[in-house]
Structure formats: structure tokens, C-alpha cells
Length: 95
Image 1 (cartoon, rainbow, N blue to C red):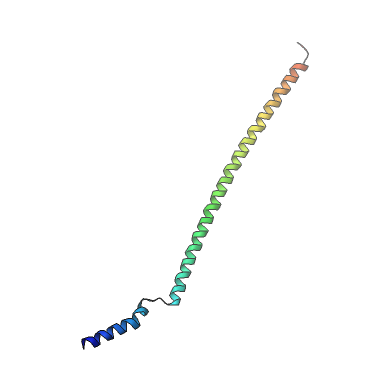
Image 2: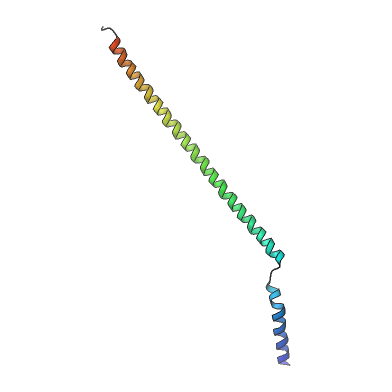
């Protein structure tokens, strides 16, 4: 009797055991969909951060270019004024 019950129990576990732990194809597809959504969101977030960093860098570079250009123009204008003053001094009649 004991052997018969053991054989039946082993038979049930061998036949029905894997079915208890196996996922269905539908569950697998649903999980894959969730994984794809999470991956897409992570990619979108990374792209957004990269775009933000690019915009910040471009703005900072633009300000530096503007400042340097303004400085160069003012220095050139100062040099022109100095040159004009020297020419004026040379061309004025002696007082």
C-alpha cells in the first residue's frame, strides 16, 4: 500500500509538477511588453537629458563668443582711436 501511494504521488508530480511552475505564453508576452516599455522610457529619459546638456552647453558657448567678440571690437576701436590721435597730433600745426 505504501509503495502504491508513493508511486502515485511520484507520477502526479512528474506529470503535473512542471505545469504548476510554468508560465503561459501570454504571461511571457505580457512581461516582454512591460520590459520593452521600461526600456523605451529609459531611452527617452537619456535622450532628454542629453538634449538638455547640449542646449546648456550651446547657450554657454554663445555667451562666451558674444563676450569675446565685444571685447575684441572694443579693443580694435580703442586702437583706431589711438592711431587717429597720433595722426591728428602730427598733422596739427604747432601751437
